[in-house]
Length: 257
Image (cartoon, rainbow, N blue to C red; front, side, top):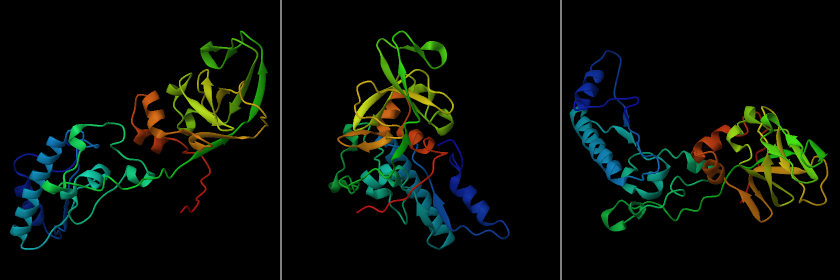
C-alpha cells in the first residue's frame, strides 16, 4: 500500500527485530489489498504471494502459528485463498458489493484454481436515509433557486425544501445533479445544495403534504436511489457516500428477515 506498515525486502527481518524488543510478542500479521475492488487481480495475487511467504517464514522462525488476516469485502466474495484465520468485510456490512461498479474479466472466480469466493452471496442494502418536506413553495417562472442562480424555473413550479445539506454529508456536487424519491417518484435536486437545506422540484408529484417522507438513499415504491448512483454523479466511490451521509441524522435500527 505504501501507507502504513512494513514494506520492502526486509519485512521478515524487521518483524524479527520487533519480536526481540523487551515486552513485545508477535501475535499476528495483516495486510491490505491496494486495489479495494480487486480490479487488477494480478497485483492482488502478487500481494497474496508475498504475504504467504512472510507468514510462513515468520511462523517457522518464531516456532508458533501466527494469526493472519488479509481479506477485504472483495476478497471475501472472490478470493478464497485470502481468507486465512479471519476476514475483514467492510462495505459488505452496508449490504453493498465492492465489485458491482466494475465488471472485469478477472473477477470471474475459478473453483479449479482454489481462488473462488462467495460471489453468489446475497447482499441487501442495510441503510436507508430519509428526510421530510420542510416547506413547499409555489414559485412563478423565471425565478432563481438557491445560491448563484444556477437553476431558474421555466414554469410555474412547486419547489420542496428539504432539511438536509452538505453539513449532513449531502455533497454540493449533487447541485442540479441528483434526484430524491417522493411518493415513489424521482424528483430532481434544483439549485445549489446548501449547508442545511436542499431544494427539489415537486411540480409533477400529486397529493403532496408537508412533512411527507423524502428518500435520499434507499427504496420507495418501485424506485431506488443507490449509493452507486450517487457516487457516479459525484465522481466518487460508494464507500464515501455510505460513510458521509446522515452523520447528523437520528438513527433507527430495524430488524429485517
